[in-house]
Amino acid sequence: MCLGVPVKIIEITEDKNSAICEYQGVRRKVNIRFVPDVKIGDYVILHAGFAIQKVEEKSAHQIYELLNQIERSQ
Image (cartoon, rainbow, N blue to C red; front, side, top):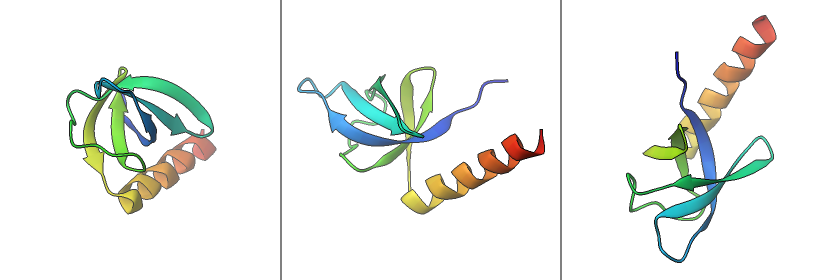
């Protein structure tokens, strides 16, 4: 099973096709072509290196909490 996780957009590249995102202190470059209206500070669902959907900050934090609960239960 594949899992998409919420990440925060930290920087957008000049070509507007990629961005630097952050999740739990880790930063990586991601493709943002599927969400062209994304801005710095937005949260997106990241899957296989692609931002596939914008999400509200509150929803991102709820997902983080659920992921933490799953991790603690194992």
